[in-house]
Image (cartoon, rainbow, N blue to C red; front, side):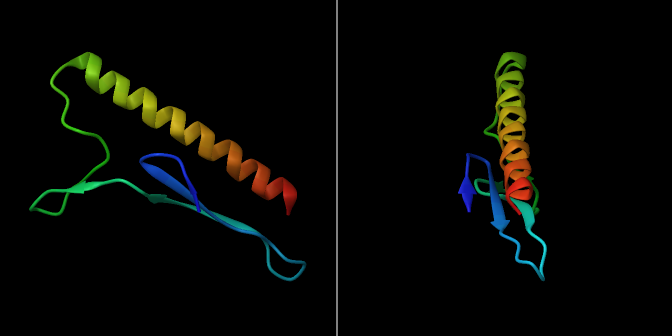
Length: 74
């Protein structure tokens, strides 16, 4: 597993008979009593939520690059 923050990338290297695969999992989440999943802390301003969104986008961009490398290596 490649843990980044809120997400992790699970990489399964390929073999000649079985292709490589990757999947994204939540590493850090908070559940409320109704079962909803939160991937950010509670934000009380637009600037805070914007920062959280940018951080999540950065993590997903990093996951994209790691997945690309995993498939290129296969």
